[in-house]
Image 1 (tube, rainbow, N blue to C red):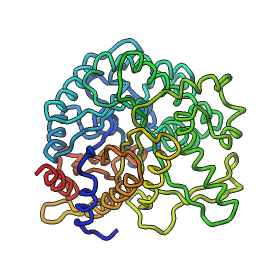
Image 2 (tube, one colour):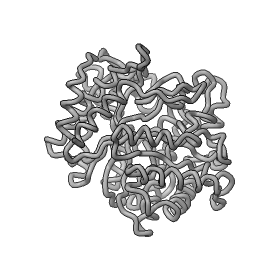
Image 3 (spheres, rainbow, N blue to C red):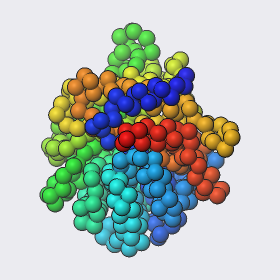
Length: 451
């Protein structure tokens, strides 16, 4: 992408007056699972499988945020952001049993949340960002109904200890990744490639969402939402077969989760494949999944070019990339996709709800010059996507906030430490932090807003 800081400043200026801006991270990616008596998660187990993670990396140290959280919070506040979207670690709080709380985990999140509040940062909490305790993964994890009920118990523990200090709460980050990416494509923990496992995980992760919202509502909490990831599906050509394949991809990736949360139903096209493997009586859970929400969150990064694929045994599509500029992940840069999902969410699913862009950003192989880590392409990425947000808001979407992913370079799941999404460069050998050009672009824009 061509770089022009004026584009970023102009896009930001069109949104600044009544929107909240923040940065996002997740527990396993930055905290370090080796610290504070944190229990093992299925990501610790997955990392032990040869070839599962680039470089054989794991999250045992990550960014050592467990010890360095004060300076990391200073970075957020010094940039001028309004909010910090973070996640709790289930195995850190409950390392050994579902009702045996780790005091070190409680103390860490007490310090972290109080540190946010002391700096004027609004805590946007996610209860689960993929680090399932190994003790539950060993009992079939998201393939088993009990996991959803254990998640409800975990929700109650968090809310009793921290709920009065949280600005917003979402139960589960990116349920598509928790279920499909991890159980059908096998790219994430637990690394399965099984249709039966996928059908059950796709349902039980939604049931967990509904039970969690129910627990929080019954305890009197508000500002509850969902965080759904989106990938813009475009057909490889204008044939009927390609358009049908793209529609089915969209149904599995996005509409399965949108339809169940906002309409109390699953897309028939996906259900026709899953039905022989769905849990008995799953229909009775749909009302519980369709809990009223206070806001909706969108995570967006890229698009997929979808082709019909007769060799794919169950869904008959395959995904690739086109000829648009790409990030260091090989993901195409397509801001129109973000505009599409914001418009659809507003028009078809929740016309009156506030919407937050809860993640948006790019991996970029930065270059150093004169002591500065240059990532001007990331600034251009933000500018283009902020412009799409502005257009969607002008068209009527009730967009209230935007979170850049991510504050720090971190453990990027199956890519280990090979890909860098941060506004702040992390030297993993020394754990030193170095703000990048994109950090300073945000800082300049946010400070100008407050003049």
